[in-house]
Length: 247
Image 1 (tube, rainbow, N blue to C red):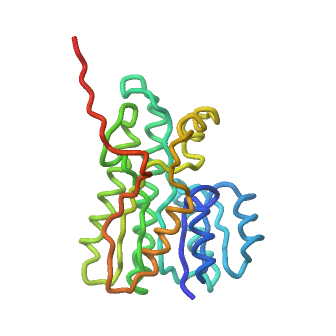
Image 2 (cartoon, one colour):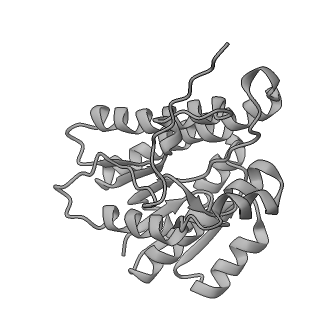
């Protein structure tokens, strides 16, 4: 039985990924900040299938402690899913909060880099896989995206750079860069359920389960195949958006 380490597993894509992998015969280390949600996953899916590790990915000491205290059955990590991340604010750069910017960098960039580096020895030993959840925001810029878009561009490109560095190790590396997925993302970003409902209304957006299905597919491909990147979008969303300002 293979084991996955999934960050941001208390909601959205992370939670759906844990469910999809467990249904396919995997064990999962599910991480996140909300203990009650992690405990609910363990209670539903079973302590033999899910190990809850409750910590903030920005807390390196807590991360080290979580890794050091993995039960023996969960210590051999075959798949790292770098999913934890967030957006805060939609203000233009000149009006944006530096605190929001720092939170996005610490979560989306620094925490991901630290965790990945710490997991590389076991992933190399087991010829495992890394899947990172980037975003189309890292490729197609929009007003108010600023640091969030920059952080996701980093995720997209860091993941592909890992592919080059891990050449010859047998470790597979994939960047999944979704468009609009209806999760708690917009609620967290804006603090408004109405804003979230308005954004997704009549769009028929992708779901967390859609992305989890892609992660599972990538993870279960034959070991000689690597998907470098995937860029899924809802049919009703595209990347056109040039603007012109007139004096």
